[in-house]
Length: 171
Length: 223
Image (tube, rainbow over all chains, first blue to last red; front, top):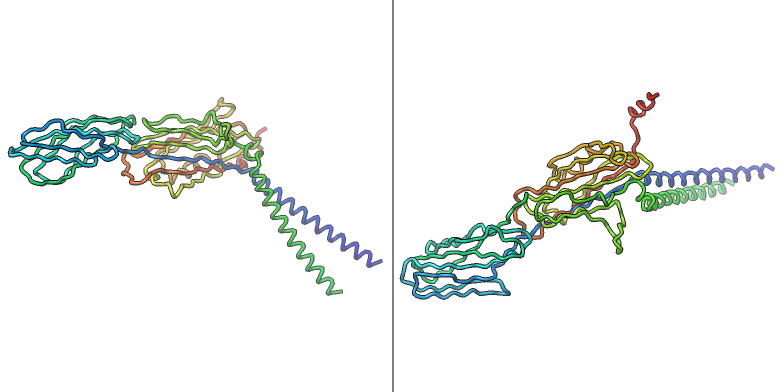
């Protein structure tokens, strides 16, 4: 008889334990669900890219020259872009001068303007911009006239850079 | 007999452990599944696409608000939005409006705003500042509360500025949160050799609003 009760008690204990565990499991589940239900996230993503400043010299031609015995002018192009200009001047006059017209294309995405000219430090040669457009819009071309004047020199190789900047407007 | 009890105890202990593990894994799975269900993600708060737009930009800036859409063009998720600004230059700006509506039965509040910046694409982070104003529209715009504003805040401080404006503020059923946010670039940016850009994520976390003790006391005083 007592063995029967012991067995019954054992069954009851096991049943109680199972009940407690089931409640525990369900509680944990509901807690998880409850927490999830009351929390919500949004994502506000921001992506910013800049405009590009890119100018290509498409052409360079000698517009005029004076004060020399002979002058040859060659613009070397690579894939439609002027890479180098060879100008040979023979002169006994002092000074001589030439005006070169550069055709530049704005291949970037922002409006640009030529803001100056940088040249190697050779005092024998002077360069100045004489005509320049205020703005070169993206996808358009503009012409920049540069005057070169020089005194006596021989076998002089020099470099010059046209400087471009973004035009800020409509702020 | 003693040996039998010891064996039973061992079996019982192992069973308890196994059941606890099952319980915990069930809870975690349940929470995750609930979190991902359409019912939860789609029922508390949603962006209103018709009211999310670009307010103003400086000349040349290509700005847009973008939602994730499926092939047919239907918006897949009204909790994610992408604020795009392309072709920005020194001095340019873009202003956006985001509208989020509480479409649940619950009163919610903002727990915090989090900020995550893409480490691979952050070269513009120091050149940008944010200004904004946050308002809440009640009863379909009949009443409007200005929660707060901020001006010329850096990207690094943006999430804390938004948190301080919106934290603990009650957003009731059908209320609309309107966030006007303006990105402003500094007037001078050093030229970049490589592709400059910026990618970031702002994550507001909404939770259910629980009234503070003072609120409860005030409510109980009402006749």
